Length: 347
Image 1 (cartoon, rainbow, N blue to C red):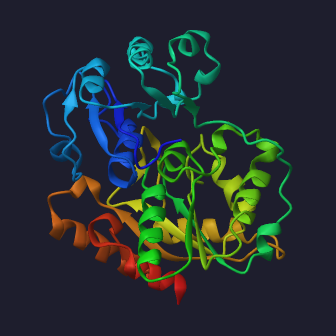
Image 2 (image 1 turned 90 degrees about the horizontal axis):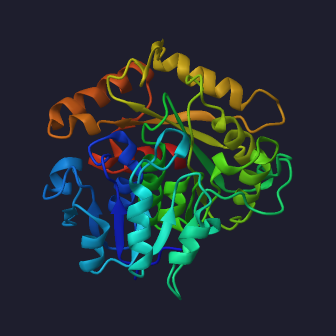
């Protein structure tokens, strides 16, 4: 796994300027390891700080060989492609990294630890870590997370790739800063790479999805609050992971994540996003559909204003408008921190 002493190279050819770069951006913003280089031949020489609004001095270089020369010892496939497939040209770059003595962290669906060619190129003492792997010994969920005394806060969204992990991590940071016993529970490959633990739910057979999340929650009983990373959206026709997380975690609170001003599902323009009050009612109804389930309410809204990066006034106005529409505390947690939303959860 990645540690604080790992020296990362983020392989992102052709994706640094897209939303599919979210794994790389997540590691740049929240990872414990220094990033020695971002590898993208299309953007070589540019500033990752300027491109992504991140505080990082990592250079963007044209090749894995150059990243290795800079001292990187761990190559991360730092993109999230549709279907989790490896893009053309990446395999050759991975082989360069392995042969130069790098370890490999894989967030895509391929089982690269079992790849014969990669295994032959791997140098002694190095590793290949496939993040999307089903944990052993899984069973079906039984609602046992309800027996935990801690708050279990699930981030839910109006779309995919909208900032649920980011909101959960910012809330976790804020909770730790106040002295709360807090844990972030990752349910996707990016969160696992950051925290070193979790369940990559899209690698788990559907019959065991609730059980996998339930087991994850039960591993952390002695905390004040669990921040459960949400996935997908009830509004997206291709999304179902959110239900397994909801049933497995039995959340006590929900935090809605929305992108300021977004009115339709990204890439599926025929699917509108209803008024947020209706979205909130939908999530609350499904979460509490059985009287034996937890009966959580949406207590706050994390508004993603990343597209308004240079316009603080517009971001503030967007938050105020959503708060007026819903009556719920609303903030851009990346820009302003998560203290207001944390207060809503803990009050």
